[in-house]
Amino acid sequence: MGVRKNARDLTSAEKAAFVAAVKRLKAQTTGRNYDWFVTTHINYFAAVGGVRYAHQSPSFLPWHRQYLTEFEKALQVLDPSVSLPYWDWTGDRTATGAPFTADFMGGTGAGGNGPVTTGPFAGATNWRITVSASSATSLRRALAAGGATLPTGTQVNRVLNVAAYDAAPWSSASATGMRNMMEGWNRQGANLHNAVHVWVGGHMAQQDSPNDPVFWLHHCNIDRLWSQWQTRWGFDAGHYLPPAGTAGVVDLNEEMQPWGGVTPAAVLDHRASYTYA
Ligand SMILES: [Cu+2]
Image (tube, rainbow, N blue to C red; front, side, top):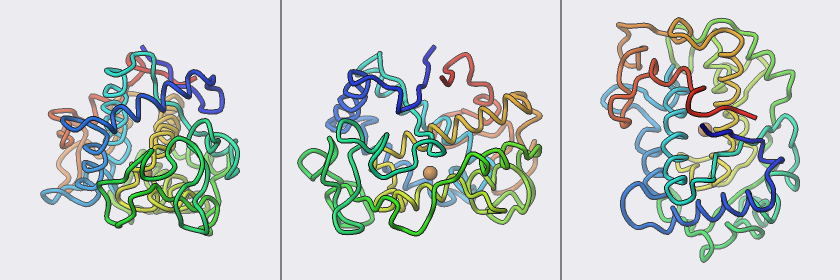
């Protein structure tokens, strides 16, 4: 069983191992390589066959949980010692601190929304963007420059205090429910997931956001917060909604594409597979 650690607590060797595994996955030219994961996020950004799987729907959390697990497994084929780290942006809130250090994710982009200039993912030779809506071949960021602020611990607690998992109309328009506050469409003073994408800017603000490796650290933290909500309210099937019979979204026991038969019910209790430090 894996333990997913806070990125700020990784040793130099753990950081180097994670970066090396990510780069090896990026260098693969076939199969579920790094760019396959980028392409999958783009393909499932909007509805597929009339069903919203990855975003603006109840399965935002279980879809990304499985997505992270598949990515982590791909890394572990290359280095079994690697687990996904999480970026707790309530504690690490600057453009120069963890995880944006030169020995890990690297820093911000040059001149606003420009190419990242420091760290292992700087420049198109180190890290070439090949699957993207934009023509940029280098990773771009605009840390803290896009007007968004990182969520606070108080705002996180406001979301974790919401008892209902989700609510009709099961979309970005849901006015109540934890999921839409966590995702960030229903703000109520607490925009968690979306605000962090905007705060990082660059590729993270686009559909091809997994081109930025910090995507995995951010979504790992979102998954951790869902796990904290589950710890408080329950890991059982009663704490996913809707249970059945809802068109256009993934009900509790419906398959999440493209994960081959994996349902929200199957991923609710992750504790036998991994835990959070
Ligand atoms: Cu996201």
